[in-house]
Amino acid sequence: PAEQLRRTPTPGDGTSRATPDGVGRSIAGHWEGKYQCQLQEIGFSLDITNHDDTRLSAVFEFFPLPGTLSFPRGSFKMSGDYNQGRRGVQLRSTEWIKRPLGFQSHDIEGELAQDGSTLQGRVLTTGCAHFTLTRE
Image 1: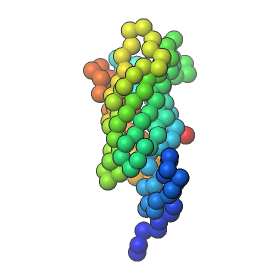
Image 2: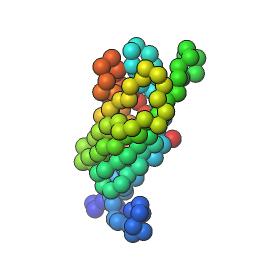
Image 3: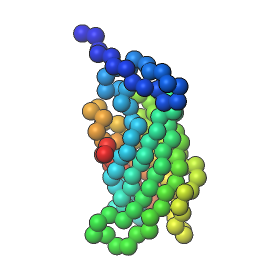
Image 4: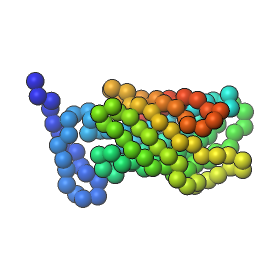
């Protein structure tokens, strides 16, 4: 059977395009979860914006998880790509918004779950490990 199509707005140009249901939702939105770095679990969120079918921008914000030791908050901008075919995401840090002393920004790569509810992958910084995010 043919896949159902739905109309989704295309940001910026006031038009819409037909996309397969579920794919058109893509990866844009607010995501929240945690990652590991230097043997610590750190909370973080990603606010992702689609600029077209493949180009993304995001804000990565990190913060202490409840019940963890004092940990500073910080944030930086990112840009990258989304491959809808394999549901793959690659984001590179571009500039700091709020940089705590001694902290470095991260690049990440991950994969969107088939149902679009989670994003999992790796933080590409020495001493860091995997991340898991849930769509909020």
